[in-house]
Image (cartoon, rainbow, N blue to C red; front, side, top):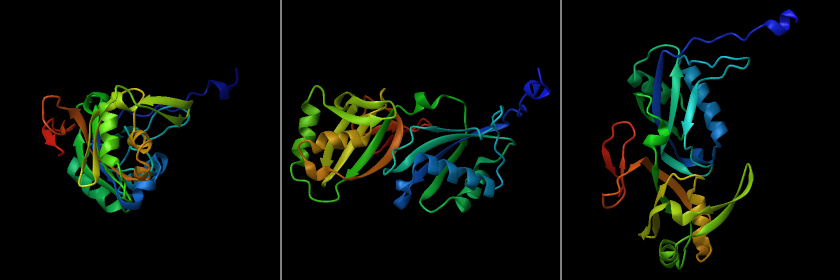
Length: 242
Protein backbone atom coordinates (compact mmCIF):
# COMPACT_ATOMS: atom_id res chain seq x y z
CA UNK A 1 0.00 0.00 0.00
CA UNK A 2 1.40 3.40 -0.99
CA UNK A 3 2.12 6.11 1.55
CA UNK A 4 -0.48 8.26 -0.20
CA UNK A 5 -3.15 5.63 0.40
CA UNK A 6 -2.14 5.37 4.06
CA UNK A 7 -2.51 9.10 4.69
CA UNK A 8 -5.43 10.01 6.93
CA UNK A 9 -7.28 13.32 6.81
CA UNK A 10 -6.45 15.83 9.50
CA UNK A 11 -8.75 15.55 12.52
CA UNK A 12 -10.30 18.84 13.56
CA UNK A 13 -10.57 19.89 17.18
CA UNK A 14 -14.06 19.53 18.69
CA UNK A 15 -16.16 22.70 18.94
CA UNK A 16 -15.64 24.89 22.00
CA UNK A 17 -19.12 26.39 21.82
CA UNK A 18 -22.39 26.07 19.89
CA UNK A 19 -24.65 29.03 19.26
CA UNK A 20 -28.16 29.14 17.87
CA UNK A 21 -29.45 32.11 15.94
CA UNK A 22 -32.76 33.47 14.71
CA UNK A 23 -32.45 35.43 11.49
CA UNK A 24 -34.71 37.18 9.01
CA UNK A 25 -34.95 37.33 5.22
CA UNK A 26 -36.49 40.64 4.21
CA UNK A 27 -37.10 42.58 1.03
CA UNK A 28 -35.29 41.25 -2.02
CA UNK A 29 -33.30 38.84 0.18
CA UNK A 30 -36.33 36.56 0.08
CA UNK A 31 -35.35 35.65 -3.48
CA UNK A 32 -31.99 34.25 -2.31
CA UNK A 33 -31.73 30.48 -2.41
CA UNK A 34 -30.75 28.60 0.73
CA UNK A 35 -27.32 27.92 -0.79
CA UNK A 36 -26.82 31.63 -1.51
CA UNK A 37 -27.74 32.50 2.06
CA UNK A 38 -25.34 29.86 3.46
CA UNK A 39 -22.45 31.29 1.43
CA UNK A 40 -23.27 34.85 2.47
CA UNK A 41 -23.53 33.84 6.13
CA UNK A 42 -20.15 32.08 6.12
CA UNK A 43 -18.55 35.17 4.54
CA UNK A 44 -20.15 37.37 7.22
CA UNK A 45 -18.71 35.12 9.95
CA UNK A 46 -15.27 35.45 8.39
CA UNK A 47 -15.52 39.22 8.09
CA UNK A 48 -16.65 39.43 11.72
CA UNK A 49 -13.60 37.35 12.75
CA UNK A 50 -15.75 34.67 14.37
CA UNK A 51 -13.80 31.41 14.28
CA UNK A 52 -15.96 28.54 13.10
CA UNK A 53 -15.34 24.90 13.98
CA UNK A 54 -14.85 22.58 11.00
CA UNK A 55 -15.69 18.96 10.35
CA UNK A 56 -12.95 16.37 9.97
CA UNK A 57 -12.29 14.45 6.76
CA UNK A 58 -10.76 15.16 3.38
CA UNK A 59 -13.14 18.07 2.73
CA UNK A 60 -13.64 19.97 6.00
CA UNK A 61 -16.66 22.27 6.06
CA UNK A 62 -18.00 24.72 8.66
CA UNK A 63 -20.22 23.13 11.29
CA UNK A 64 -23.40 25.04 10.52
CA UNK A 65 -26.82 23.43 10.49
CA UNK A 66 -30.07 25.03 9.34
CA UNK A 67 -33.61 24.24 10.49
CA UNK A 68 -36.66 24.27 8.21
CA UNK A 69 -35.28 26.89 5.82
CA UNK A 70 -38.06 28.78 4.05
CA UNK A 71 -38.38 28.25 0.31
CA UNK A 72 -36.87 30.70 -2.16
CA UNK A 73 -39.28 33.60 -2.63
CA UNK A 74 -40.65 33.54 0.90
CA UNK A 75 -39.72 36.24 3.38
CA UNK A 76 -39.24 35.29 7.01
CA UNK A 77 -38.86 36.73 10.49
CA UNK A 78 -38.14 33.33 12.04
CA UNK A 79 -35.37 31.29 10.43
CA UNK A 80 -33.04 29.30 12.68
CA UNK A 81 -29.53 27.88 12.50
CA UNK A 82 -26.83 26.47 14.76
CA UNK A 83 -23.13 27.20 14.36
CA UNK A 84 -20.24 25.51 16.14
CA UNK A 85 -17.31 27.75 17.11
CA UNK A 86 -13.62 27.09 17.65
CA UNK A 87 -13.53 29.50 20.59
CA UNK A 88 -15.98 30.64 23.27
CA UNK A 89 -17.66 33.95 22.41
CA UNK A 90 -20.18 36.22 24.08
CA UNK A 91 -23.46 35.67 22.18
CA UNK A 92 -24.35 39.36 22.35
CA UNK A 93 -20.97 40.34 20.88
CA UNK A 94 -21.48 37.80 18.10
CA UNK A 95 -24.87 39.35 17.37
CA UNK A 96 -23.37 42.84 17.24
CA UNK A 97 -20.47 41.78 15.01
CA UNK A 98 -22.69 39.88 12.57
CA UNK A 99 -25.19 42.74 12.38
CA UNK A 100 -22.43 44.90 10.89
CA UNK A 101 -21.46 42.31 8.28
CA UNK A 102 -24.69 40.73 7.03
CA UNK A 103 -25.92 41.81 3.57
CA UNK A 104 -29.04 44.01 3.31
CA UNK A 105 -32.22 42.09 4.03
CA UNK A 106 -30.40 39.31 5.88
CA UNK A 107 -30.59 40.17 9.57
CA UNK A 108 -29.46 38.16 12.59
CA UNK A 109 -32.02 38.91 15.32
CA UNK A 110 -31.07 36.70 18.27
CA UNK A 111 -28.03 34.68 19.35
CA UNK A 112 -28.08 32.26 22.31
CA UNK A 113 -26.07 29.33 23.61
CA UNK A 114 -27.80 26.03 22.96
CA UNK A 115 -28.72 23.22 25.32
CA UNK A 116 -28.59 20.88 22.27
CA UNK A 117 -32.32 20.10 22.29
CA UNK A 118 -32.97 19.05 18.67
CA UNK A 119 -34.59 21.68 16.48
CA UNK A 120 -37.12 19.02 15.43
CA UNK A 121 -38.50 19.10 19.00
CA UNK A 122 -38.55 22.90 19.22
CA UNK A 123 -39.89 23.84 15.77
CA UNK A 124 -43.03 21.80 15.20
CA UNK A 125 -45.23 24.49 13.63
CA UNK A 126 -45.07 27.77 11.70
CA UNK A 127 -47.25 30.86 11.44
CA UNK A 128 -47.40 32.58 8.05
CA UNK A 129 -48.95 35.66 6.45
CA UNK A 130 -50.03 35.46 2.81
CA UNK A 131 -50.61 38.78 1.04
CA UNK A 132 -52.29 38.69 -2.39
CA UNK A 133 -50.65 41.02 -4.91
CA UNK A 134 -53.96 41.67 -6.70
CA UNK A 135 -57.69 41.27 -6.12
CA UNK A 136 -58.60 37.69 -5.28
CA UNK A 137 -62.39 37.30 -5.57
CA UNK A 138 -63.67 34.21 -3.81
CA UNK A 139 -60.69 33.97 -1.45
CA UNK A 140 -62.75 33.55 1.71
CA UNK A 141 -64.84 30.85 0.05
CA UNK A 142 -61.71 29.02 -1.11
CA UNK A 143 -60.29 29.11 2.43
CA UNK A 144 -63.55 27.78 3.88
CA UNK A 145 -63.62 24.97 1.32
CA UNK A 146 -60.08 23.87 2.15
CA UNK A 147 -60.78 23.91 5.91
CA UNK A 148 -64.03 21.97 5.45
CA UNK A 149 -62.42 19.21 3.37
CA UNK A 150 -61.16 15.93 4.82
CA UNK A 151 -58.16 15.96 2.45
CA UNK A 152 -56.80 18.42 -0.11
CA UNK A 153 -54.05 17.00 -2.30
CA UNK A 154 -51.63 18.98 -4.45
CA UNK A 155 -48.52 17.96 -6.36
CA UNK A 156 -45.05 19.47 -6.29
CA UNK A 157 -41.84 18.53 -8.05
CA UNK A 158 -39.12 17.53 -5.57
CA UNK A 159 -35.57 16.24 -5.91
CA UNK A 160 -36.95 12.71 -5.91
CA UNK A 161 -39.62 13.48 -8.52
CA UNK A 162 -43.26 14.54 -8.43
CA UNK A 163 -44.86 14.08 -5.00
CA UNK A 164 -48.37 14.42 -3.68
CA UNK A 165 -49.01 16.38 -0.47
CA UNK A 166 -52.15 16.43 1.66
CA UNK A 167 -52.40 20.11 2.55
CA UNK A 168 -55.35 19.64 4.88
CA UNK A 169 -53.48 17.17 7.10
CA UNK A 170 -50.85 19.84 7.91
CA UNK A 171 -53.25 22.72 8.51
CA UNK A 172 -53.74 23.97 12.07
CA UNK A 173 -55.53 27.13 11.02
CA UNK A 174 -56.38 29.08 7.88
CA UNK A 175 -58.48 32.26 7.69
CA UNK A 176 -58.80 35.62 5.94
CA UNK A 177 -58.46 38.95 7.78
CA UNK A 178 -58.44 42.31 5.95
CA UNK A 179 -57.77 40.57 2.64
CA UNK A 180 -54.72 38.69 3.98
CA UNK A 181 -54.54 34.97 4.67
CA UNK A 182 -53.30 33.82 8.09
CA UNK A 183 -51.86 30.33 8.03
CA UNK A 184 -50.68 27.91 10.72
CA UNK A 185 -48.91 24.75 9.57
CA UNK A 186 -47.71 21.64 11.37
CA UNK A 187 -44.25 20.47 10.33
CA UNK A 188 -45.33 17.05 9.07
CA UNK A 189 -43.41 14.58 6.91
CA UNK A 190 -43.34 15.17 3.99
CA UNK A 191 -43.23 18.89 4.76
CA UNK A 192 -46.18 20.90 3.49
CA UNK A 193 -45.13 24.42 2.47
CA UNK A 194 -47.14 27.64 2.08
CA UNK A 195 -46.84 27.40 -1.70
CA UNK A 196 -48.66 24.05 -1.47
CA UNK A 197 -51.47 25.82 0.38
CA UNK A 198 -51.49 28.54 -2.28
CA UNK A 199 -51.73 25.86 -4.96
CA UNK A 200 -54.74 24.38 -3.19
CA UNK A 201 -56.46 27.76 -2.86
CA UNK A 202 -55.71 28.66 -6.49
CA UNK A 203 -57.82 25.72 -7.65
CA UNK A 204 -60.92 27.82 -6.94
CA UNK A 205 -59.36 31.28 -6.43
CA UNK A 206 -56.83 31.94 -9.24
CA UNK A 207 -56.22 35.49 -7.99
CA UNK A 208 -54.23 34.18 -5.01
CA UNK A 209 -51.51 32.85 -7.28
CA UNK A 210 -48.22 34.72 -6.84
CA UNK A 211 -49.10 36.08 -3.39
CA UNK A 212 -46.32 37.32 -1.11
CA UNK A 213 -45.55 34.88 1.71
CA UNK A 214 -43.88 35.74 5.04
CA UNK A 215 -43.07 33.38 7.91
CA UNK A 216 -43.86 35.22 11.14
CA UNK A 217 -42.88 32.65 13.77
CA UNK A 218 -41.85 29.07 14.49
CA UNK A 219 -42.15 27.04 17.66
CA UNK A 220 -44.27 24.45 19.44
CA UNK A 221 -47.99 24.94 18.89
CA UNK A 222 -50.14 25.32 22.00
CA UNK A 223 -53.21 23.21 21.19
CA UNK A 224 -55.17 24.61 24.13
CA UNK A 225 -54.67 28.27 23.25
CA UNK A 226 -57.07 30.36 21.17
CA UNK A 227 -55.41 31.95 18.18
CA UNK A 228 -51.87 31.38 16.98
CA UNK A 229 -49.72 30.72 20.05
CA UNK A 230 -46.26 29.18 19.73
CA UNK A 231 -43.62 28.40 22.34
CA UNK A 232 -40.47 30.40 21.63
CA UNK A 233 -37.71 27.88 20.78
CA UNK A 234 -35.10 29.82 22.78
CA UNK A 235 -37.02 30.73 25.94
CA UNK A 236 -40.03 28.43 25.90
CA UNK A 237 -42.28 31.44 26.55
CA UNK A 238 -45.68 31.48 24.87
CA UNK A 239 -45.78 33.93 21.95
CA UNK A 240 -49.13 35.07 20.54
CA UNK A 241 -48.67 35.64 16.82
CA UNK A 242 -52.24 36.88 16.32
